[in-house]
Amino acid sequence: MAVASPIRVGIVGVGRAGWGMHRPELNGHGGYRIIAACDLVAERAQMLADAADARAYTDYRDLVNDPEVDLVVVATRSDTHAEVDIAALEAGKHVVAEKPFATSLAEADRIIAAAAKARGRLLVRQNRRFDPAFLHIREILASGRLGELYQVRLCRHGYQRRNDWQTLRAFQGGQLNNWGPHIIDHALQLIAAPVASLWSDLRNVAAAGDAEDHLKIVLRGANGVVADIEISGGVALGSPIWHLVGTQGALVSDERSITLKWYDRAAMAPVSADPGDPPLEGGFANVEAIPWQSEEISVAPARPTSFYAEVHRALTEGSTFPVSLEEARAVVQVTELARAGTGF
Image 1 (tube, helix red, strand yellow):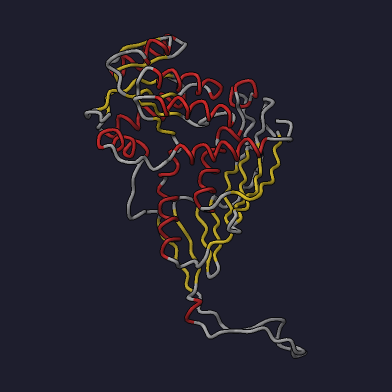
Image 2 (cartoon, rainbow, N blue to C red):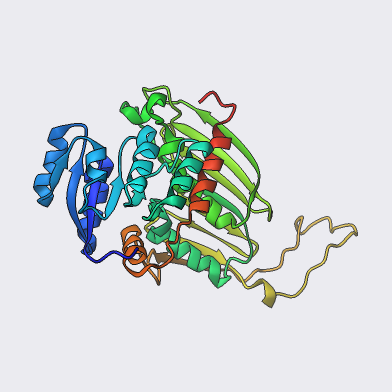
Protein backbone atom coordinates (compact mmCIF):
# COMPACT_ATOMS: atom_id res chain seq x y z
CA MET A 1 0.00 0.00 0.00
CA ALA A 2 1.46 3.33 -1.11
CA VAL A 3 1.64 6.11 1.45
CA ALA A 4 1.06 9.81 0.86
CA SER A 5 3.82 12.25 1.76
CA PRO A 6 4.50 13.44 4.38
CA ILE A 7 4.58 9.98 5.92
CA ARG A 8 3.10 10.04 9.44
CA VAL A 9 5.58 8.47 11.86
CA GLY A 10 5.39 7.05 15.37
CA ILE A 11 8.68 6.43 17.18
CA VAL A 12 8.81 3.70 19.82
CA GLY A 13 11.79 4.28 22.10
CA VAL A 14 12.94 7.82 22.84
CA GLY A 15 16.54 7.02 23.71
CA ARG A 16 19.83 7.69 21.97
CA ALA A 17 18.61 6.12 18.73
CA GLY A 18 15.04 7.42 18.73
CA TRP A 19 15.86 10.95 19.87
CA GLY A 20 19.42 11.39 18.62
CA MET A 21 19.33 9.52 15.29
CA HIS A 22 15.86 8.82 13.91
CA ARG A 23 14.30 12.13 14.96
CA PRO A 24 16.87 14.39 13.22
CA GLU A 25 17.08 12.14 10.15
CA LEU A 26 13.30 12.14 9.73
CA ASN A 27 13.07 15.89 10.27
CA GLY A 28 15.97 16.53 7.90
CA HIS A 29 14.38 14.67 5.02
CA GLY A 30 11.23 16.76 4.73
CA GLY A 31 8.94 13.94 3.66
CA TYR A 32 7.99 12.75 7.14
CA ARG A 33 5.97 14.10 10.06
CA ILE A 34 6.42 12.68 13.56
CA ILE A 35 2.92 12.45 15.06
CA ALA A 36 3.44 10.00 17.94
CA ALA A 37 6.14 9.09 20.46
CA CYS A 38 6.34 6.24 22.94
CA ASP A 39 8.71 5.47 25.77
CA LEU A 40 8.45 3.62 29.07
CA VAL A 41 9.68 6.83 30.68
CA ALA A 42 6.75 9.21 30.29
CA GLU A 43 8.96 12.31 30.44
CA ARG A 44 10.98 11.13 27.44
CA ALA A 45 7.89 10.40 25.38
CA GLN A 46 6.51 13.83 26.27
CA MET A 47 9.82 15.51 25.38
CA LEU A 48 9.61 14.21 21.81
CA ALA A 49 5.88 14.87 21.66
CA ASP A 50 6.46 18.49 22.68
CA ALA A 51 9.29 18.92 20.17
CA ALA A 52 7.24 17.46 17.30
CA ASP A 53 3.74 18.59 18.31
CA ALA A 54 2.86 14.90 18.59
CA ARG A 55 1.00 12.50 20.88
CA ALA A 56 2.80 10.76 23.75
CA TYR A 57 2.35 7.12 24.80
CA THR A 58 3.99 4.90 27.39
CA ASP A 59 2.69 1.58 25.96
CA TYR A 60 3.88 0.68 22.46
CA ARG A 61 0.62 -1.20 21.82
CA ASP A 62 -1.25 2.09 21.96
CA LEU A 63 1.08 3.68 19.43
CA VAL A 64 1.02 0.82 16.92
CA ASN A 65 -2.78 0.86 17.04
CA ASP A 66 -2.99 4.62 16.49
CA PRO A 67 -5.01 4.83 13.23
CA GLU A 68 -3.17 7.93 12.02
CA VAL A 69 0.32 6.40 12.17
CA ASP A 70 1.62 5.14 8.80
CA LEU A 71 5.14 4.11 9.82
CA VAL A 72 6.36 2.77 13.16
CA VAL A 73 10.05 3.27 13.92
CA VAL A 74 11.19 0.69 16.47
CA ALA A 75 14.13 2.11 18.43
CA THR A 76 13.82 0.21 21.70
CA ARG A 77 16.48 -1.86 23.48
CA SER A 78 17.88 -4.72 21.42
CA ASP A 79 16.14 -7.51 23.33
CA THR A 80 12.67 -6.04 22.58
CA HIS A 81 12.93 -5.31 18.85
CA ALA A 82 11.17 -8.46 17.66
CA GLU A 83 8.21 -8.06 20.00
CA VAL A 84 7.49 -4.50 18.88
CA ASP A 85 8.25 -5.18 15.19
CA ILE A 86 5.74 -8.03 15.07
CA ALA A 87 3.06 -6.09 16.96
CA ALA A 88 3.37 -3.16 14.55
CA LEU A 89 3.23 -5.44 11.51
CA GLU A 90 0.15 -7.20 12.88
CA ALA A 91 -1.45 -3.77 13.38
CA GLY A 92 -1.04 -3.12 9.65
CA LYS A 93 1.77 -0.58 9.91
CA HIS A 94 4.90 -0.12 7.87
CA VAL A 95 7.86 -0.77 10.16
CA VAL A 96 11.45 0.45 10.38
CA ALA A 97 13.26 -2.26 12.34
CA GLU A 98 16.33 -0.94 14.12
CA LYS A 99 19.43 -3.12 14.28
CA PRO A 100 20.03 -5.72 15.45
CA PHE A 101 17.21 -6.93 13.22
CA ALA A 102 17.03 -10.00 15.47
CA THR A 103 19.06 -11.60 18.23
CA SER A 104 18.81 -15.10 16.74
CA LEU A 105 17.99 -16.71 13.42
CA ALA A 106 14.79 -18.16 14.88
CA GLU A 107 13.73 -14.67 15.96
CA ALA A 108 14.53 -13.28 12.51
CA ASP A 109 12.38 -15.96 10.91
CA ARG A 110 9.45 -15.07 13.19
CA ILE A 111 9.67 -11.42 12.18
CA ILE A 112 9.95 -12.30 8.48
CA ALA A 113 6.95 -14.64 8.78
CA ALA A 114 4.92 -11.81 10.34
CA ALA A 115 5.99 -9.49 7.52
CA ALA A 116 4.88 -12.01 4.90
CA LYS A 117 1.33 -11.85 6.28
CA ALA A 118 1.26 -8.11 6.90
CA ARG A 119 -0.25 -5.27 4.89
CA GLY A 120 2.67 -3.01 5.73
CA ARG A 121 6.31 -3.28 4.67
CA LEU A 122 9.21 -4.23 6.90
CA LEU A 123 12.29 -2.05 6.33
CA VAL A 124 15.43 -3.11 8.20
CA ARG A 125 17.71 -0.28 9.29
CA GLN A 126 21.00 -1.29 7.77
CA ASN A 127 21.53 2.44 7.44
CA ARG A 128 25.29 2.27 6.98
CA ARG A 129 24.65 0.59 3.64
CA PHE A 130 24.10 4.21 2.54
CA ASP A 131 27.15 5.78 4.19
CA PRO A 132 28.99 8.05 1.71
CA ALA A 133 32.28 6.16 2.17
CA PHE A 134 30.68 2.78 1.48
CA LEU A 135 28.85 4.10 -1.59
CA HIS A 136 32.04 5.70 -2.93
CA ILE A 137 34.13 2.59 -2.30
CA ARG A 138 31.61 0.47 -4.19
CA GLU A 139 31.83 2.88 -7.12
CA ILE A 140 35.63 2.52 -7.13
CA LEU A 141 35.37 -1.28 -7.08
CA ALA A 142 32.89 -1.19 -9.96
CA SER A 143 35.35 0.90 -11.99
CA GLY A 144 37.79 -2.03 -12.04
CA ARG A 145 40.80 0.03 -10.98
CA LEU A 146 41.70 -2.35 -8.16
CA GLY A 147 41.26 -5.46 -10.29
CA GLU A 148 39.52 -8.43 -8.71
CA LEU A 149 38.80 -7.91 -5.02
CA TYR A 150 40.18 -10.72 -2.87
CA GLN A 151 40.63 -9.31 0.64
CA VAL A 152 38.65 -6.90 2.81
CA ARG A 153 39.64 -5.59 6.23
CA LEU A 154 37.05 -3.58 8.16
CA CYS A 155 37.92 -2.08 11.55
CA ARG A 156 36.11 0.00 14.15
CA HIS A 157 38.58 0.58 16.94
CA GLY A 158 38.51 2.62 20.11
CA TYR A 159 39.08 2.30 23.82
CA GLN A 160 36.27 2.98 26.26
CA ARG A 161 35.36 1.68 29.71
CA ARG A 162 31.71 1.70 28.71
CA ASN A 163 29.15 1.01 31.43
CA ASP A 164 25.63 1.42 29.97
CA TRP A 165 23.05 -1.26 29.10
CA GLN A 166 24.84 -1.93 25.81
CA THR A 167 27.50 -3.74 27.86
CA LEU A 168 25.02 -6.19 29.42
CA ARG A 169 24.11 -9.57 27.95
CA ALA A 170 20.67 -9.48 29.63
CA PHE A 171 19.66 -6.75 27.15
CA GLN A 172 21.48 -8.34 24.17
CA GLY A 173 24.22 -5.74 24.52
CA GLY A 174 27.76 -6.05 23.21
CA GLN A 175 29.59 -5.06 20.05
CA LEU A 176 28.27 -7.99 18.02
CA ASN A 177 24.70 -6.67 18.23
CA ASN A 178 25.68 -3.00 18.34
CA TRP A 179 28.26 -2.33 15.61
CA GLY A 180 28.27 -5.89 14.29
CA PRO A 181 25.19 -5.65 12.02
CA HIS A 182 26.62 -2.60 10.23
CA ILE A 183 30.06 -4.02 9.54
CA ILE A 184 28.92 -7.57 8.83
CA ASP A 185 26.48 -6.16 6.28
CA HIS A 186 29.32 -4.25 4.62
CA ALA A 187 31.43 -7.40 4.52
CA LEU A 188 28.66 -9.53 3.02
CA GLN A 189 27.95 -6.91 0.37
CA LEU A 190 31.62 -6.75 -0.59
CA ILE A 191 32.13 -10.52 -0.59
CA ALA A 192 29.03 -10.84 -2.80
CA ALA A 193 28.85 -14.61 -2.33
CA PRO A 194 27.54 -17.07 0.26
CA VAL A 195 29.75 -17.49 3.33
CA ALA A 196 31.72 -20.73 3.06
CA SER A 197 33.56 -20.54 6.39
CA LEU A 198 33.73 -18.38 9.51
CA TRP A 199 36.12 -17.98 12.43
CA SER A 200 35.47 -15.69 15.38
CA ASP A 201 36.90 -14.49 18.67
CA LEU A 202 34.86 -12.51 21.21
CA ARG A 203 36.12 -11.14 24.50
CA ASN A 204 35.57 -8.46 27.13
CA VAL A 205 38.54 -6.10 27.42
CA ALA A 206 37.50 -2.79 28.95
CA ALA A 207 33.71 -2.55 29.27
CA ALA A 208 32.12 -2.78 32.71
CA GLY A 209 29.39 -5.24 31.73
CA ASP A 210 29.47 -8.94 30.89
CA ALA A 211 28.99 -8.61 27.11
CA GLU A 212 31.79 -8.64 24.55
CA ASP A 213 33.40 -5.29 23.73
CA HIS A 214 35.97 -6.78 21.33
CA LEU A 215 35.35 -9.09 18.41
CA LYS A 216 37.19 -10.45 15.42
CA ILE A 217 35.42 -12.34 12.64
CA VAL A 218 37.05 -13.77 9.53
CA LEU A 219 34.68 -14.73 6.73
CA ARG A 220 35.56 -16.56 3.54
CA GLY A 221 33.10 -16.41 0.69
CA ALA A 222 32.34 -19.26 -1.67
CA ASN A 223 34.16 -17.17 -4.29
CA GLY A 224 37.34 -17.07 -2.18
CA VAL A 225 37.07 -13.44 -1.04
CA VAL A 226 38.13 -13.03 2.60
CA ALA A 227 36.68 -10.41 4.96
CA ASP A 228 38.52 -9.66 8.21
CA ILE A 229 36.32 -7.74 10.68
CA GLU A 230 37.48 -6.14 13.92
CA ILE A 231 35.15 -4.15 16.18
CA SER A 232 36.55 -3.17 19.53
CA GLY A 233 36.21 -0.89 22.51
CA GLY A 234 39.54 -2.18 23.76
CA VAL A 235 42.10 -1.06 21.13
CA ALA A 236 44.07 2.06 22.07
CA LEU A 237 45.72 2.54 18.65
CA GLY A 238 43.36 1.73 15.82
CA SER A 239 43.78 0.52 12.24
CA PRO A 240 42.27 2.09 9.10
CA ILE A 241 38.49 1.76 8.94
CA TRP A 242 38.63 0.41 5.39
CA HIS A 243 41.43 -1.58 3.69
CA LEU A 244 40.47 -3.32 0.46
CA VAL A 245 42.93 -5.29 -1.66
CA GLY A 246 42.51 -6.29 -5.29
CA THR A 247 44.70 -8.05 -7.85
CA GLN A 248 46.08 -4.78 -9.22
CA GLY A 249 45.63 -2.27 -6.42
CA ALA A 250 44.34 -1.38 -2.98
CA LEU A 251 42.61 1.37 -1.04
CA VAL A 252 42.43 2.59 2.52
CA SER A 253 39.95 5.04 3.98
CA ASP A 254 39.17 6.86 7.22
CA GLU A 255 35.68 7.70 5.83
CA ARG A 256 36.70 11.31 5.12
CA SER A 257 39.14 10.53 2.32
CA ILE A 258 40.14 7.50 0.26
CA THR A 259 43.73 6.70 -0.72
CA LEU A 260 44.21 4.49 -3.77
CA LYS A 261 47.20 2.79 -5.35
CA TRP A 262 46.77 0.79 -8.56
CA TYR A 263 48.20 -0.05 -11.98
CA ASP A 264 46.84 -1.36 -15.26
CA ARG A 265 47.85 -5.01 -15.17
CA ALA A 266 46.56 -5.69 -18.67
CA ALA A 267 48.95 -3.09 -20.10
CA MET A 268 52.01 -4.86 -18.69
CA ALA A 269 54.05 -7.43 -20.58
CA PRO A 270 53.39 -11.03 -19.50
CA VAL A 271 55.73 -12.44 -16.86
CA SER A 272 56.44 -16.12 -16.28
CA ALA A 273 58.18 -18.01 -13.50
CA ASP A 274 61.85 -18.88 -14.11
CA PRO A 275 62.87 -22.30 -12.73
CA GLY A 276 66.57 -21.61 -13.21
CA ASP A 277 69.18 -20.38 -10.75
CA PRO A 278 68.77 -16.69 -9.94
CA PRO A 279 71.80 -14.40 -10.16
CA LEU A 280 73.92 -14.09 -7.04
CA GLU A 281 73.29 -10.37 -6.96
CA GLY A 282 70.33 -8.27 -7.99
CA GLY A 283 67.53 -9.15 -5.63
CA PHE A 284 65.21 -12.03 -5.01
CA ALA A 285 62.37 -11.31 -7.42
CA ASN A 286 61.34 -9.65 -10.65
CA VAL A 287 62.62 -6.09 -10.36
CA GLU A 288 60.49 -4.59 -13.13
CA ALA A 289 59.22 -1.06 -12.55
CA ILE A 290 55.48 -1.23 -12.07
CA PRO A 291 53.81 2.01 -13.22
CA TRP A 292 51.85 2.61 -10.04
CA GLN A 293 49.28 5.36 -9.88
CA SER A 294 48.32 6.92 -6.55
CA GLU A 295 45.49 9.22 -5.62
CA GLU A 296 43.91 10.62 -2.48
CA ILE A 297 40.33 11.79 -2.92
CA SER A 298 37.65 13.17 -0.63
CA VAL A 299 34.70 10.90 0.04
CA ALA A 300 32.01 12.06 -2.39
CA PRO A 301 29.95 9.31 -4.05
CA ALA A 302 28.50 10.10 -7.46
CA ARG A 303 25.07 8.85 -6.39
CA PRO A 304 24.58 9.74 -2.71
CA THR A 305 21.48 8.63 -0.87
CA SER A 306 20.34 7.97 2.69
CA PHE A 307 18.36 5.43 4.65
CA TYR A 308 15.26 7.57 5.04
CA ALA A 309 15.41 8.73 1.41
CA GLU A 310 15.20 5.08 0.37
CA VAL A 311 12.42 4.35 2.90
CA HIS A 312 10.42 7.31 1.57
CA ARG A 313 10.87 6.18 -2.02
CA ALA A 314 9.83 2.62 -1.14
CA LEU A 315 6.67 3.67 0.70
CA THR A 316 5.48 6.49 -1.56
CA GLU A 317 6.51 5.04 -4.93
CA GLY A 318 6.38 1.32 -4.22
CA SER A 319 10.02 0.89 -5.21
CA THR A 320 12.21 -2.00 -4.09
CA PHE A 321 13.97 -1.21 -0.82
CA PRO A 322 17.74 -1.75 -1.24
CA VAL A 323 18.06 -3.94 1.89
CA SER A 324 16.16 -7.18 1.35
CA LEU A 325 14.87 -9.28 4.23
CA GLU A 326 17.08 -12.13 2.98
CA GLU A 327 20.13 -9.87 3.32
CA ALA A 328 19.07 -8.81 6.81
CA ARG A 329 18.61 -12.46 7.75
CA ALA A 330 22.09 -13.29 6.43
CA VAL A 331 23.58 -10.71 8.81
CA VAL A 332 21.79 -12.36 11.74
CA GLN A 333 23.03 -15.76 10.61
CA VAL A 334 26.65 -14.58 10.65
CA THR A 335 26.08 -12.99 14.06
CA GLU A 336 24.69 -16.23 15.45
CA LEU A 337 27.55 -18.31 14.02
CA ALA A 338 30.14 -15.83 15.30
CA ARG A 339 28.72 -16.03 18.83
CA ALA A 340 28.45 -19.83 18.95
CA GLY A 341 30.87 -21.46 21.36
CA THR A 342 32.46 -18.21 22.54
CA GLY A 343 30.77 -18.01 25.93
CA PHE A 344 29.05 -14.77 24.98
